[in-house]
Length: 175
Image (cartoon, rainbow, N blue to C red; front, side, top):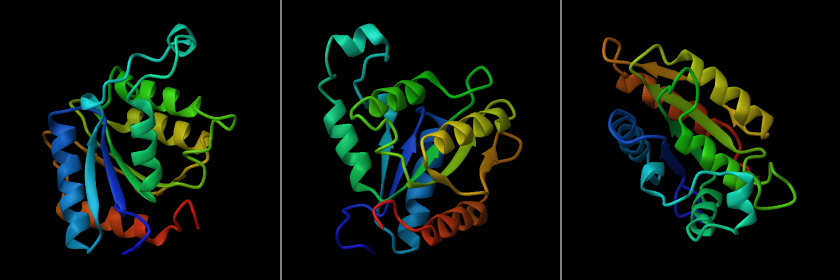
């Protein structure tokens, strides 16, 4: 474990319900691997929808704390459903807010190891492709394997553990 970080793996849930449950499973599996982990439920973060007008009105009160929490964790897992064939609005808006907080829009994401997973009502593959594309554009190192699950193909514990082990092998963003 890294003594400089309070959390080794931050598991971000892009919705409540099934993806929050999946995030909790990732956090528990990380702890089983002797990694400090916690879950961040984006639906509980009070951020307005990102728009140029909202940005011109000023930085939302909770954004600095969110950015600090994300920055403090060297590795992330993002668990998010597929909404209309893409990334859910809460996650897209949070990424947009975070990317305009410095002159370098990639600052928080650049070099960050990230694993991605979904528990979707539909296929879930298009959200994984869209999220992988966006995170790569921001400079993140996205684990090659991803986890796609739904009601007929639930996430397997072995797959969660494998993703976490792959994530751990990537150097942290601050290395």
